[in-house]
Length: 597
Image (cartoon, rainbow, N blue to C red; front, top):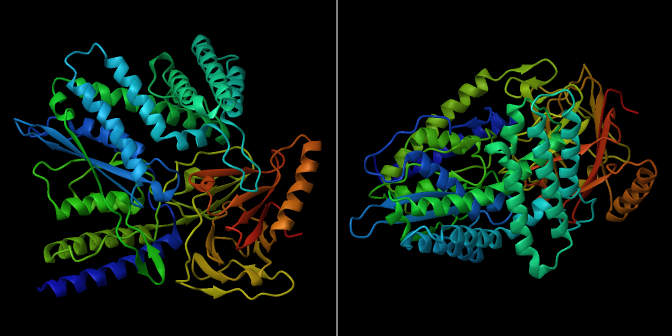
């Protein structure tokens, strides 16, 4: 078969693959449950000096450092390549991001590695702690923006700012103190609460600090968070609470995750220096090269921009330029998506540590003149195998009573309405006992494919039945078509509905709602601000601070999972406004347990 034939074969296979991915996405956005591959068996190699599990651990660390900015564009991956030349052993660290890493990110990471090299070349361990301190400070400089976002509220984007981490830590501490009553091992809980108090103090000091002293304060916060995470020699705060059988609500769980993420920066600095000083691999760390992959040019399918994720960029690089001693692992700053996970499995040469199992239909593989005949055929076969797997999942996919999918059953609750929106990186969702709306992901992109209906605009709000021969519907909805109301009832159960409004695609997946409605109406910026002031004034008088939330659809607050609660614990409605960069403002209201009123 000629190169042209193989190229055409790959193009056809990709087109069919993308169509199938979109179809599966309309059935479920989470085809598989989150996976943890760290607990698996690692194959060892006599050719490698670094153990397989050590390579995975270090690659994940480097990937976290490579993501110096928030958002899907910054999600990064890393691979570590050994060169065991007897005279000059070395490491090559290769990184990739969904968008090519910025020069300042590469420079900051290079400075971290320079300190690691210096530590490796030291004759003794006398100054080991000094090197750890130095590399931690450099890591904090590199990751200062992400750390500041975790600790304090983001810049005001016109909406209500979220609580400081110090306030959330205080709330967590109070909750743990309440749980101390009638439980065993109270001293352990008490020591944890003491450490949480110290962390609060460090965070409060940071919020009052000058710009010049912020690095030192951030370093103190990382140390205090690590003290919390490792109380009683535990690997993480999450692990501590799980081992004690402590169940927390969603807001407290997210606080736990934030503390552990901040704590990890100290783990990274310690591990890098510790590995550099190990006799077994000391020589490798004396000479570290840092290489950066350039993100591929944009590809399109049905007028949608497709993205080559960082993990796939690295695999493609080593397909172009095979290494003498190839890496075995791909480190990721976030858990891999469903399609990256599936591609890596079908490819068969590499491992990852985690997958969140979510499907991004705009995922693709790279293309270009460098793709030779053999690689065209290989990628075609991989995509065909992936398509067969997606067909199997689609065929076996069932939706249980209450509009709850087989794969989503452990995430839903009777009192929770959930809206999922597409994103590249998300933390695993946790259950909550409050009435809430969970908004996950970055809202972006324009999707006009797979239209299954058109909403007609009118002066009065039209009511749209969600009943459809397909489990999901994509409605093209222009701003002038608003307002609209989507009714939910036993006769018209709401499955997943996708609305494309302006340049934003909204995916509404509302679970376990027998009666209710979804209302979307247009709002000008002045209307939003006026409404917010009115509602917040009323809320302050009632001691409530979570009434109206304004969300920037392209802002970084949607990089992960954002939780919006009702006014009261038994609320049966949530209302919020979305601003798409000033181009389109809408107000979304979800009501459950009652009919439209």
